[in-house]
Length: 356
Picture 1: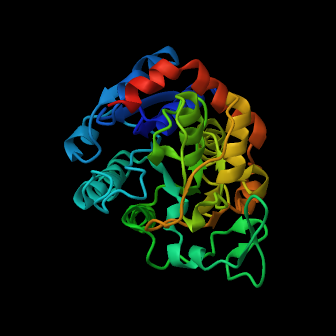
Picture 2: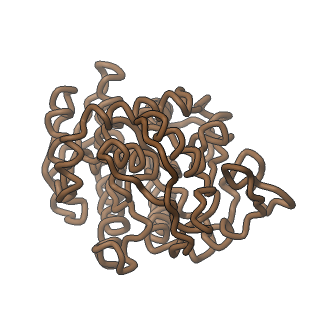
């Protein structure tokens, strides 16, 4: 079986490609990346050592995908992942976000149509309504927001399910990913190739540079490793907002099962995330990092809430568990400790890319 991974030099793409390549000798993995993200070239040696063949190309250019070898499956990991992208505050224009996230998916869908390849679309929890998430009934606990009161449709103590509202506003980034999902559904129906859509929350772990747009867990660990003190932003500046997370390797385990069973009777669209047991508030994350790095003192906060921020997002991954027997394989504490240890051991490497 041959598998193409787009965005293969990013943290998520490189770790997924490496895990797939190491799964069995019957899997041949190759990937494409335009190396435009600073530091992405550092993944080239990592991929080569694990037998992943690299092609330089841009998913926004149809001819670059046409030049690639054929594959049985494509895994779409190429995207601008920042929820702030396209809003004027990230340095990335709206057109760039749409071109990379939606235009790139369109070109990959054409690749799948012409090559007869199945597609695993790595989507995002940001397709869910920011307004609806902001209106969740929450109470303030000592260290985090806690769900309380009457829950809306698609939400329970397990978190946000696939039935939760996707009504706008969802951010420009979220809109490009939701549009990509719809387009992929139409292509799969029209041209008869297998499709899996995995809506991921925060994905992070060792090896991630920790830039802010890569997710809060690695960002916090890398900040402390560099001797910097991140701030709580929004919701009164107390750090009560909650997220869950998984590692890219854990996501790869689900993808491996999906591509090995293309005809499995399972929903096309799934939430994949850590769930309540793999969730932390910013305050809890900050306390962990202070303890790990031996830092004392309080953490500053900014009261004002930014556009598209949400106070609570935890994934209900019940469908993935039921249909694919998938759940995170690592505990929250173990994953975070490994991330902090990697950040501490690679301070110079992180500092080089944070300074650019």
